[in-house]
Image (cartoon, rainbow, N blue to C red; front, top):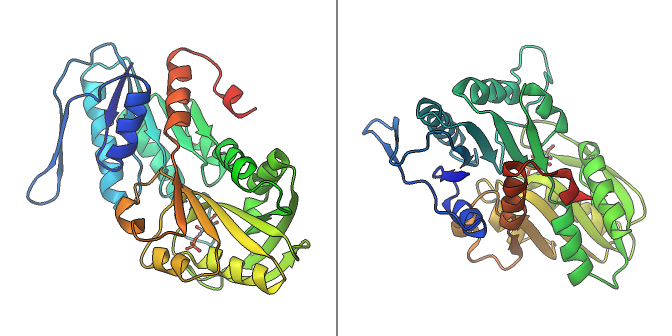
Length: 310
Ligand code: R5P
């Protein structure tokens, strides 16, 4: 087994490799003057099972292309298997036609990764589980819920907790966390009047005098979360903690969080946000690296991955 890192989240790749007591494959990834990507693998990987770690986060198009070219280089170098480890799977939010004549970007991503030569995909909290079906190869979708549950049980015990889904699409994810920490469930009825804008219509459930735990897969502009927190506080919530798998944190999202009524936002490191959040004491990063290394080890040894989540 060998690990190769793209350039999107080197910190996480290094940590995964360290946990597995491996060195990252010596690779040369550089840009031509016009921005095109050049990939060269500087060691023999013939017959190896190679895991390529690359989040397709901002700049998404560049990071996707880099992933595809690395996979192609591995295929042409006779790797035995090529697992695309995509901690944050970008373009997953368009997983169906939401209007006539729109694209299904998650399917296009699946086609690109397949055609480049990947033989397996490992990812974390896919925006929609059914995206696994866009691939005709094994896809391991890892969950952050056990990580979040452990944190909550340790740091927020003795509080009157209620888990809150920020929209109807997130109910299954939120119910899973609520079951793990034995808390009630509330749901926010969110509307999107326009792309990138969100409005809270109603809160289903009693949040008064409780500590709310919002759980979501992505925080992008921060609009969904800030609106949800304001609505929960208005309905009498004591305090609001937010648990997010992927900190996309575009534009001034980090500033919005800092100036909001959020008690704390806990986000994993599927995306490297070191620069964006270094002066924001409301944001705490929980590393996904042990979970990812354990999953990679189990895949390499043909052991169960789902056992990690029971
Ligand atoms: C949407 O379905 C996702 O789960 C997130 O709620 C959404 O992407 C967050 O976006 P924003 O932070 O821009 O409101």
